[in-house]
Length: 118
Length: 110
Image (tube, rainbow over all chains, first blue to last red; front, top):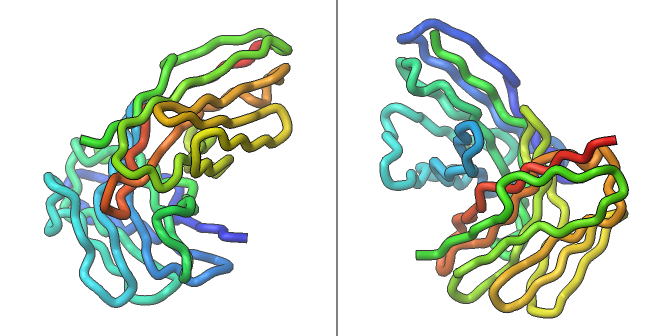
């Protein structure tokens, strides 16, 4: 149980393009979803936390107009990288927490999206 | 500031050569210490949660232990398929945010 699906797994696009990444909880309802960014040989860095039906909470230094997050249902959150540039190239990973779970319990992670901006 | 520090950064073992990975933490009011395995190009896969000093959890060749300042992931008689990056993480004090260590990249040679 607790499967999180992330799509696409890899995307390559030109500078200036906007890219949407989907994160779905397949077998549970996710009240909270998290978006992370990971650079090579670095740790996961939290970008934002989204609760279903509410505006996302962004971490310090993360541009909310650059990284648009929507969590419109209990099974889907999306991250849109607007007007992407080469410095936005990274590995983006989502995770989810089920209804009834709290921060004392592990998050369930998707398989990540490798974004490459040319 | 809450921190999670893992060592070593990388570890190479021969198949069957047991060893331990370290995760030291400075988190106020620890509410759980999580171990994950991450394969290249994949998201983290949950392994264990430890909640209190003295607690131990086991799964196949892996055993995780917790003290008041650190956690260890012991790997007994590892196999090449155990090669991965192992991450530990803990909830930041007073928030939902998970603080991750940088991970230990384990390579097990046949």
